[in-house]
Amino acid sequence: MTTKAAALPLRRVEECMGTVFSFDVRAAGVESADLEEVVDWLHWVDANFSTYRSDSAISRLAALGRARTADGCREEVRHVLARCEELREATNGYFDAYATGRLDPSGYVKGWAIERASDMLIERGSTRHCINGGGDVQVIGGQAHCEPWQIGIAHPLHPGTLAAVIVGDDLAVATSGSAERGTHIFDPVARAEPGYWSSVTLVGRRIAECDAYATAAFAMGEAAMDWVESLAGYEAFAIAVTGRTWASSGLS
Amino acid sequence: MKRVLLALTGTIAGLVALLSFKVQTETQATILPSASGTGGATAAPGNVNGTSTAPSGGTTATPAPTSAAPAATVVTLDGAAVRTRYGTVQVEVQMKGGAIASVSFLQLTGRDRQSQEINAHAGPILLQETLTVQSAKVSTVSGATYTSDGYRQSLQSALDQAAK
Picture 1 (cartoon, chains in turn orange, blue):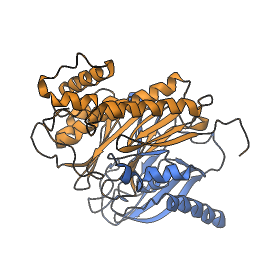
Picture 2: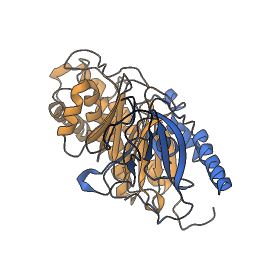
Picture 3: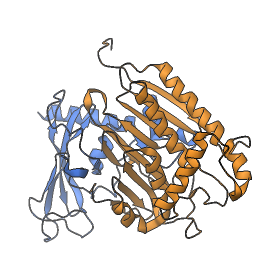
C-alpha cells in the first residue's frame, strides 16, 4: 500500500463522555491536527455538560432546580436547553431532559456533539467521514471510491451479531436500547421503565435530533410505529423484546 | 468451477469469523425483498421469486409476494446483491418447509466495480437477510450506548482494531 492516490483513512478512537468515539475520515486534505481540534472540542463539551462533574455548567444549573435560568450561560448551554425543550414538545413529552426529575440533557448532548463534530470536519474540508459516538452514527458522503456506507445494527438479543445493515450516504443512525446499560431510559409519560422494545434504531439525516427521537421512540413502546410513520425524513428499524422485528414503510 | 466457488466461500466465511458475526437461526427465514429508498430512489437489486409457491408453516418469510399455497414446497429466494471486501455477492436460497435447504451464489464478482452498484444516492436501504447481513462489509455499528468498558466487547471495537 504505497499508493498515495487514494486518501488513507484517518482513524481515531477517543474515550469521552463515559463512552468511546470512533472517527473514520476518508477525505484527502483532512489532517490529524484537524481531528485533534474536534476531539478537544468534545472534551470541552464533556467538561461543560457532564452531570457527573459537580463543577460543570449543567450541574450548577441542575442544583437550581426548575427555577434555573440559562440567561447568564454560554451560548452552547442555552442552545442545548432550548433544543431539549423543543424536542420534548416534538415527542409529546417522551424525550424529556427532566425525565428523572433532575435536569439531565445528556440524551441530547452526545448526539449534538457528534453532529457538531461532523460539521467541524466538513468545515475543515471533509467530504467523507463516519463518526460513531457510543453507538450513534453520523456518516457524510460515501466510502472510498464512492461506495455507500454500510452501517450495521447490533442485535440487542444476540450480542456480537448484527440484526440488519443500513446502506446509504449522508445518514444519521441512532439506536436506543437496553442491551448495553440496562434500561436507562425512563418513560416520563407513563412514569415507568419502557418494556416493549429491545432496541429501536432511527435513521435520519442529522444525528442530534435523530438520537433524541430514537430515545423517545424506545420509551413510547408500540405507539412508536405510528409516530415514526408520521415523521418526515425518518425511517426506523426496531426489535421487540419478543424478538419480532419491525421496519418503517420506507425501509420495508 | 466448483473449486472456485468453494475457495470464495472460504474467504467469505473467514470475514465472518474475523468480525465474530454468528449466523442466527431464528432470523434465517426472514428474507425481505430489497427495500426501496425514500423519495422513490433506486433500491438494491434483488427480488423474491417463488418458483413453486409460498412458504409453509405460516411462520416464514415476512413479505409474501406470491400467493399462498401448500406446504413442503421448495421456495427460491434471491437475496440482494451485497458488496463485501471480496466483491459483490448475491445469494440464492432454496427453502423447504421453512428451513434453508441450499444456498448458491448468483453473483460473485471480484474487482468489477461496474457490476450491480447500489445507487449511492438512494435513500436508506435496509438489508435484513441473515446471509447478507452477516457477510456485509460494515464500516461501523450502531447499537445501544455502550460504556467505555462495554466498548471493548463491542463490534465497533473489533472494527476499529481491524482497521489498525
